[in-house]
Length: 380
Image (cartoon, rainbow, N blue to C red; front, side, top):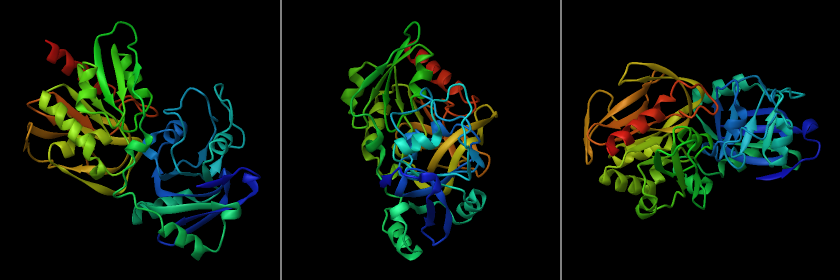
C-alpha cells in the first residue's frame, strides 16, 4: 500500500473489483493505492470498533450505512493498537463530527494511519453487486496511483485471494501480557491471541477473571505455565484451513479436559480440532444485526459478526469426535450457517460471532457467564 495525504477530499478516486466493475468517487483518508478483499458491513454504527478489529486485516470494508463519521474518532473505543482494514468505502462522509468524546474526524484518523479510502460512490449498488457475485479482490486508487481501468484491473488480479491466506500471526501480539481481574480474582484464563479485540479480555475481567493473553505461536506448555482454569481462543483473520498450529494447540487443551471457549476464528479452530471441515462463504456475515438461534435454549439473539469462513458440521445430528460427542449449538437464521459448537462430554464450546459487543448488541453476553460456569463446575 502506498499513501500520501495532500488534498485528499478533492482528489478523484476509483474502486476496481476483480470482475471489472468500477466505481468512481473521491479520496477519503490517505491518497494512494491499496488492495484487499471487498466486503460489506451492515452496522449503522460502531465504525471505530470495526476498523480496529484485527479480523478485518487485508479487507476493503464497504459501509452499507449511507452516512459515516458523524461521531468522529475518540481515544477510548479502539479495539486494538491500529486500524487493520486495508481500505474503507463510504457513501456520504460526515463533514463535521459531533460527539462529546470525539477528538478528531474519521477522515483525519484514516489519513494519520495511512488508510486509503474512497467516498461519494453508490455503496448500495456496490453492496448488491457483492451480494450477487460474492466478496472479491479489489483495489482503491487515487492521486498518482490512478491509471486507465485496464491497468488498474491488472494490478487487482495480481493480488492473492483470501482463501488460503494465513494472517492470524500478523495481527496477534508478539509478547504475552496480563489483563487483571476487576475486583476479586476468581479464575485465571489463558487467552490465545489470533486477532483478539480489547473488549474481550475486559468482559472476562469484569467477571473476576485474570486473563493472560498469549501469542498465536504459544505452545501447550506456554498455556499451562499460567495454571489456567480455562482456555480461550479469540477471533482473527484469514482462512482457518491454514491454522494448523492453533488446531494442534486446541487439541492439546481438549485432551487435558480444561474448560475451553472460542469465538469466531476460535470457533473454526474448534471445528477443525473436532474433525470438521471449513469453507468460504459467498459474501460472509459482517455487521451488528445478525439473527442467531441458541439451539440449546431456543432463544434468538441479535449478534455482531465478522467472518467470511464457516464450519462444515451437520445440523441435524450429534457427531462423534475424538473428544466425545459434539453438536451444533447455534445457527444463523438467515442462511443456516453453523454459528456455534459444543462438546457434550467435555467442557468446551464456541460461537462464530462476537459476544463482547464492541460494537454491537449485548444479547450474547451470557456466553461469558457460561464459560465461568464451566470453570466453576470443573473446580467443584
